[in-house]
Image 1 (tube, rainbow, N blue to C red):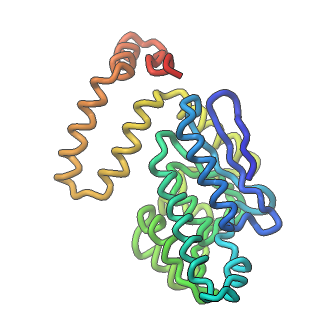
Image 2 (cartoon, rainbow, N blue to C red):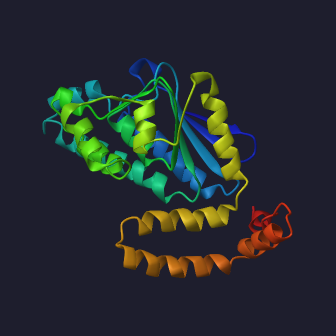
Length: 263
């Protein structure tokens, strides 16, 4: 994996197994997890972009690596458990990070690669991108990818992709809500950078509070969600950044977040 700082506040993480279509080996998952942990503790980082090197974004898990572990004494069970536990930890880490994570998708995002797109807070794809959770083609129901997918798109559409291995294009992915933008490939990087730059201008402290609250309330019933979010917005209003932001908004000025002084 390649880590690249873009300016002062944006971190780009590039999946770098182009010959394997950036399949998520256990090694790559651990690298990505470590990079996300490091970013969480670096308060100068305000947004993360995840993209892929070479001909595609990510084709899912490395089936060749998986198949090779069948020769282990336990038939691969220990490896399989380690692989999917690590993958789950990494996907959940994205949601728990105090900053926005944006997927930059080109060509293909399949199986766990599609799961990665669904797990990111925002996603932009080139018009030619294809999305699939087509493990069924290889005798595998995409059980773990369906967790993120089914929380992004309607059930019937998710089941069609999961049970039939149906591929969808970027326009369909946009209409279903899997991605935020579908753009010509020559505009992909610039569009992602535009979103990341906007995110980086916001208060990191407020984004952290709001992102955490979003993923909490989405799993609650409406009454519980309102009760919890009432408490969250009160805490938000008591933050110095909120006081500063409201004053700047009223005075039609650019806010300078008090929390930035701590970084």
